[in-house]
Image (cartoon, rainbow, N blue to C red; front, side):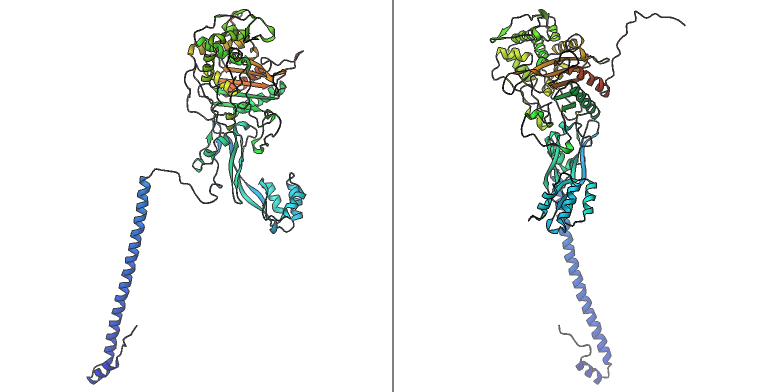
Length: 594
């Protein structure tokens, strides 16, 4: 830059020759230079303002365009895509129909080690084995002194255990935050909830995934961040579930059974208010699956949906109801039950060789006659019988929303002959689950509409297509009531609550073929109140033996029925059902005055 001098020599000499003041020249030059500097500063500032204005204009244009694009697009839930965001996502709670907590998340820590950073591996191994009794000191020391730079010690620890590890003071022992799944009620509803475990794991987080029950069936829903604050509402009633488990456990022990299951279902919605399978387990410490032996011996085995059995005489009411629905008979039609009766080269007998003679259809159910039911089945025919049972849902696994239910598909005969029709009419030759039976009895209880069992809370009735007429369902309910008042289920009467139901005792099949002579599946299928049923209750005992008498008794009337009666006595008030006051006979009462 070339600077102009403020006092140019030529002008000063010229000014002095003319007698002028040279300082005036200097002041004039200073003024001109200041004006030039101001002009340059103004131009520079105007340029900067122009650039800044253009920048803000572009920014507002981008924001406005993005807002317009969002306004015209379909709404969707944003999802983080950063690594580990899925791991750190929370899992929704599970609650019962009244909002009581069944499963939630609990903040805890995992323990891991970095062997290169450890000061005294031997001391750490010794102290860890003392804190965690399931760890082996020698095995820990071998791992700490190996070549690995990182290893897990415990996937989850309690605050007390964490403090104890802190006191070891080894910098190579570190903690990672964790969310663990907590079931505050312990074993309650264990087979429904199933359990959860860890999926992807990192030092700072681990994802919780369902491994069984509703935890696995609804895993996507529970893991979705959009549902983090919306719990999964089940149809279970926590108080009814607790009472049912207590009664069934006591009944199983009293009847010397190896296992048991019960199902309480709303006949209009299909909601399963209570479902129990024994023996049970604690989902907070879920045992490992059995690798050998009978699967039903494992506490993880869900007898309500996985247990597929011949359910015996509980099926007889379906035969009677279909025959009435088809117009072949009515409740008072007389049926010959005397022998002999041979079908397909096989003789059809009665329990303990009884002979009921000629009795009504209602008494066929009351006395539980195999021959009477078989003769009704022959009138119905194999094709119509198959279609009816299929309409009730007995040909496929139930749609009950736990993963184990898909494995409970009924076992059907390869050829549906006349002999098959007869034996199936009284519950042999076809195996199904207690959940299937509950859905079938619900159709009778609600007036003839199919109901699908569900574990989710419903907002109103959820009935399917009609499978039988209201008249046939009404007659069937009357027969079931008579079974309790004067038939094989006399121990099922509960004062104040009219109970209707049917017993079923089926010999257990041997793994190598044939049947045991001293092992049975005893079932009682009940509905209450019988005059206007609201609930169906199924109680099944595996290998029960009642030993209070001179001889061991295994039939459902002696084993499953008393357990079901006690369960109804306990849970009916919890369900809000008020007992009916029976009218009193006043003939022996004399009115007197004071």
